[in-house]
Image (tube, rainbow, N blue to C red; front, side, top):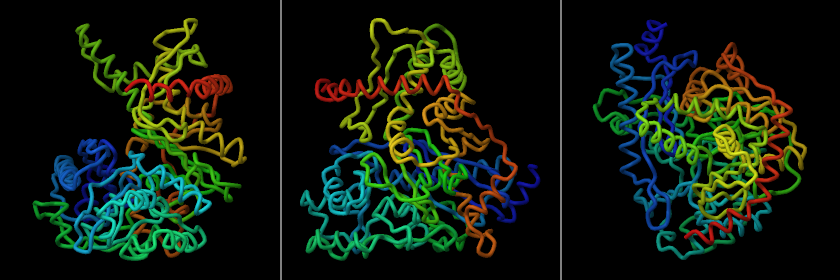
Length: 531
């Protein structure tokens, strides 16, 4: 197999996906059959400056180059080959946020990431204007909030994009965006796969005289999966690989957000399917058969990378709090003179959670390291609470922490599944929470009441999904749909494990979530009292 992979690398019969996650930038190189052959990564962290979460342009550029170098080093180590060309490239990143530039392509204000909740007021006003839910993290909400704030830079905005749109622009010179990510910048009409004309008109009237151009003129051009999004320029090749070894001219597919790459990486682009991505944040994407009966603040309406309507529940918090607890247990182990590798520590603690009571023995946890809009908590206040009669044990404690990872997600998904009657046949899980086999998967099945599948490739995550979209650009058949390509050329014969929900686990999770929702005022009070 190594010799086959080596041949693919030497021939350039590969595709490269790079995804900018919240804490890690990851690159995955795949062969013509979509199998991962090499990977690279770069750890990074956002900064909280002047009240906003951000990454600097220097952070972005250095992270991109460091991640690519890590990949190229992995290729050389495995195959003795210097990476000089690939078949296609795709760029992905954490969704939405706010990046605006003037006519000379200068960044006007530091990048505002999805984690910021400063545009909530603008989002509410736009939701009322459009009759369509606009989340606070969406690009148009950030834009309108900046206008409402009277921020000086607004009058100079010539172009607005997202993180992956920015990196794609650096590499190709093209100001484009994939339709899935576009639907989180400004509402998209599923019928046309373009920005909604009626809402564009309403927004232009709302902000008349405040912007240099009409809003559609400052937004990136929308492309759907499979369309050409430009080629790697000589300047772009030098940016990506400062050593000068990488050739220019490589085609790029439309840049997509991590929501879109998650759908691709889990074969969840057809109706009545969905996926849950569980890492620093957690979100569920359910491909809808029809529109919901009304707007819900807990549910975002976005699209697949080909423009089909998706109900999305996005929660800001997932694994950050449980990571802190695992680190704490690691410190205790070290204090006791026991050296436990981090992966083994996670496995030990997660497997212990399976021994806990189905309802967590009455324990409660809120993993809110940052704000959580689904449950209306304005700031991060992680809490672990219990009654004097609760059954305190390590198993119950860890089960509570893992249930908490899906707590806010379940609150949002229950609106679609229970109130709207959305039909969901299966969910595919991916992301770091599912690296320990079975545990997170079975708890998610209990939370949503549907079978959950985790593929062998789950750990590859969105970077792999982005590489698949790059391969789809250059390898799809005439008129071949993305759904067909995934079914027949990516996931056919793939190893995966499907776990149906256990009825007792479902009952236990329902008990937990009832207590979880009832006690939410405690967290909101903590925001006010713990300052």
